[in-house]
Amino acid sequence: ASKVRKWMGTHPDTGVPFVPMGTDKYYRLDGRLLDVELFQRLRERGDAKAAAGDPTAIDDYVAALDMVRGPILPEASGTGWGWLANEDRREDLKAPGWVVDAAHRAVQVALTAGDLDRARWAANLAHDTDPYSDVPLLDLLVIAAQAGDMATANKHAWEVVWANEKDVPEELPTETFQVINRIFPTGLRAVGH
Figure (spheres, rainbow, N blue to C red):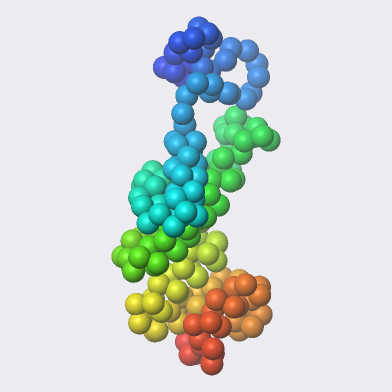
């Protein structure tokens, strides 16, 4: 902690070190903008623009998503990461959901604008960040269907089914099934897995 304390320096207004002294295992970085906070600000600004029908909302979502480089703190489940165990924060647990949510919103705005490449990029980034979420796979399914690639859409639909350890789409949660059924009202084509 002493190396980090020296590296981070002191708050210019208070003179207090950004990394506090003492035995408290939690660190609070007051007066600094963390990447995760900038991500949230960009996402919120994109949300406000999207709600107002402003097509430039995609720019804020993309700027936020450009900050993501893969899974969020995947090593945090190991030892030495006790400083993350601050109940009022837990970015290590929350951030993947924030990325998936921002990417899903980016997909919606991009699809509305007909930008399939940008939509696909956002959905793939979300899937790389949280491979256990159905949302990116459903987004990829919708993107493939909008592109007219029903074979790929069918593949993504089955990936959702199998990721949920189900045998047929009808066993999925209602909202998930509704997305698949809207695109494949007569059912999916069988494929092996």
